[in-house]
Image (cartoon, rainbow, N blue to C red; front, side):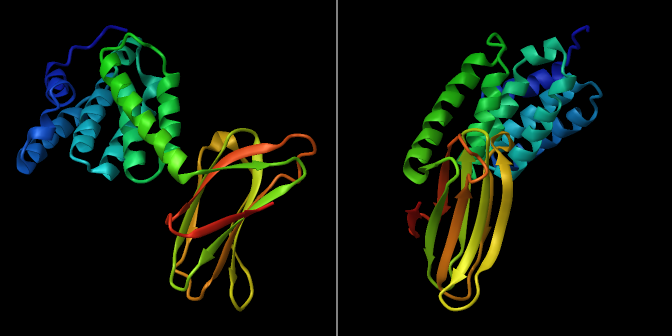
Length: 261
C-alpha cells in the first residue's frame, strides 16, 4: 500500500503530540484547534489518516483532562487497528491511542481497566514506531501509578479448589458501595448480596464462571436505606483441582471489610 502524505494532519500531530501545544493553549484556542482537527479527520477516508486524526483529538483531550472525550476518541482509534496498513502502524498513533485509553481509565478511578489497556499496548510490539520513546516513557510512569494503586487499594484473594471466599462489607445507613475485581486466570463464580440489619437479603449482582479474559469486573449499589452488609462471594466450587487468585477493591476506602473463608 502506498503511503499517503497528509501535511495538515502531520502539522496538527506535531503541535499536539510533539510539542504538547494544547496544554499551553487558552480554552478558546484549544476549542478552535480541536474543531480544525475534527474537520480534517472527518474529511479522511483511509483508516491510517482517520486513526491519526482521532489520536490527535484524544491526546488533546488528555492534555485538557477531559477524560470521557479522551476515552471515546482513543477507543475509536484503537478500533481501527485491523484496518491499518504497516505504514500506519509505524506512525505510532495506534500506540498513543492505547496509552490515552489507559490514562483515561486511571484518571477515572479504574486502575484495573488501565492495567488492561497497558497490557494491550505492550502486545502491539513494533518498537521502532515514531513515538516509541515518548509512549514508553509515559507508559512506564503510568505502570508505576497503577502498581501503587493496586498495592494501596486492592487485596489479594486466593480461592481454593472446591471452595469459596466471602468479603463482608459493613454499610451504615445511606451508604453506597462500589467493587471491582481482576481475576488472574481461568474463571470464577461471583455474587453480591445485601443483607440488611433487619429484613430479607437482596441479590445485587451475579456472574457465573466469569472469565479472566473478559477483564476487570465492576459493580456497585446504593445508597442503602438501612444499615447492613454487602457480601461479595467468590465461589470456585465447580473446580475440583485448580485454585483461583484475584485482586479485589471495595470503595469508598473507609468502609470496614473483612474476609471470611
